[in-house]
Length: 516
Image (cartoon, rainbow, N blue to C red; front, top):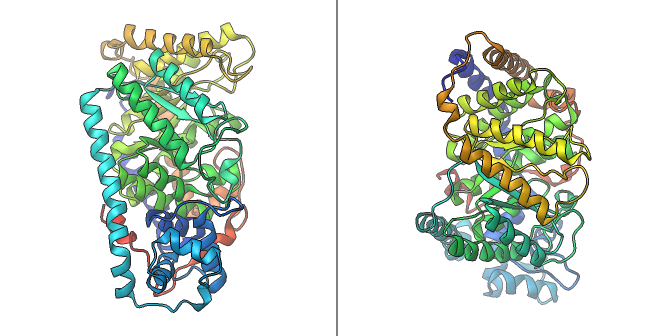
């Protein structure tokens, strides 16, 4: 379908320039600061894992102790190296010794940079080697078990119990799902720690933990062998532990992580500075691990009108793209988001949805675009919902979307039953098979509804980006320009975890990831 909208690509180029300017204005601040979650992700990369008797994860225990002892401005990795040098122990044993009172951080002298690098070098090499091994393993499995042709059908499991999730994930894969997303337990994004170990109780979802990632990865690899089709594993890295979850995903070979640059600010009231720093480091990890990120623009249309606010989705996609490039993600890793959310009662609504979906596809041709189903106007009428979902399926196939979150006919009623999921996946597969070549067969009327709507949305996004370039992204968030939700620069959760880097700041992974 590409090339059929006759949009002005000069405007597209200018939008990218404006987005580059908008994000560039923040990159100096981002690179000059760290956060407690970034530091926890660094010590996780160095092998620190486990939890103390109270259940507090060791990365939290150590980083909080380092912060009390002298702040995090010099980085947690250096202090971990100091403890290892004094005790001649590995990171986990060193922290356990500190937990027992056998060593006090206040009694540990600060070593020089060369000594720190020497003791940490094998751990750094081990972490990068583990990530590289997972990349190679993914490529090998995808070669041995080729994936379906896009749109890839993306299905959610959310029982709260990882072992029940495995059963549902296997079932969904057998029905034809290509991507399995394990929804996190409600409000996990607001926890300033990552729970440890497998979990069997969660509300509205299952906790994102490294052991849960491992369990589900193993299950989906077994399913891939059975079905001769690689299955993507998806989880969520947004929230106060964004970089840590990125590390866990890289270590356990996740394929996709929801990793937006502004979602946590807008929808979870997490501090903007904290989020911008965390998203940068987490995305560098994803870049190295070859993990596809998913962004959250579809959520804007749950609080703002999908027709009036369509341009805010496109503007945000441009911004997310530039933040991703700053973190060295390739276009093929940028699962930029949008949604099929126009009121079904609006005349020519399908044509408008077609215009907006194809516009995103044309502007970001190399990105694995993620397309979300209708939810805002879905009611308890399951027949109506199934019909609207089918229009969504048709639009997705016609416009060449890549990642297709399958709509559920019981969306407005309850967490889907297996039978509900079967009907929804079956409908999406029906559309994908029967309409595969439709987009190539169609031409649009010049200056018709579709072409004019695409130009209108692009021009509005261009104007919005110009305004944001003048007032800054923080100013735009404060005015509520995205999703009609206002957030202040110094408000929100996690602000106290933001620290300016000292001249001697030490992070042994930063240079490696910047060179990815």
